[in-house]
Image (cartoon, rainbow, N blue to C red):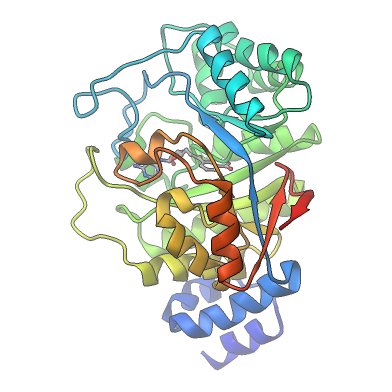
Length: 354
Ligand code: V47
């Protein structure tokens, strides 16, 4: 343990064995090191953006056991939005000052790739300045399989149709044995990483998520982080790492334990210490609640994600995020914590300090 503490003090890169030993440290020792690193990079700034989530369909060819969003017998409300309906949402949100639309769809076999990608073209033509963060690697893989397009072709079309950056969804947990149990048939971990690598090669940026608090073990989380760290060494294209706390309602996954706040904060702190090459760690308020996401800002995180306006994926699983958060709530909470609220754009350029 002494050598691990020395390595942390010297800010050395941790190998897999050392990273796994971090769990044995108490929360406040981890917090001390994680907060120091966070402060060196970002001072007292807490980042967020003005964004809108749009989920154009919940009809899914996949049957991920952890998911409560896709239409199934516990959530029997299948929908597919028309392009006109999507545009109406975009018009309204742009009028309110939103600067990013985050568009994620289920894998709907009744649509075409033109339906998926046409959404972006339509939005970009009308609002060239609006940042489109869209198409998880799982969606890229779905279009590739369904329409016999190579990954390269899907990514080229995304660029052509106006996608600016890729969200981090679909990563779940990279361990293939766990994947088999929670999301069999979905994009493999190898292909998730390959798709992001190809996207980064085009000079584009993306995020990376990790779904935790279900049946995975701590070492699976470390393995997940290390595989992201390896890719980031090569490509440098990840903007942010986003640990997503699994929301358990309305799913088909049987899990007896509920992840406690200490384990969530430890996971955030460890991700800051292990992912020494990813600058931003998001405490995604939708999955951990705004209060804990604020506490996480002193345990290694430096971002809250955005105002969202409407959230359908995690709220289907029980999260209190269906209506997003008001900008004023973010600002007031951050200031109350004696930290500095910074509105950013999707690529982490600072827009306004409040
Ligand atoms: O990949 C699904 C997860 C992800 C549940 O890139 C669940 O900035 C918790 O990726 N409980 C989609 N999580 C959302 C996502 C995301 C969110 C915020 C920001 C960004 C970003 C990306 O949601 C899926 C899956 O891992 N998910 N069901 C659930 N019950």
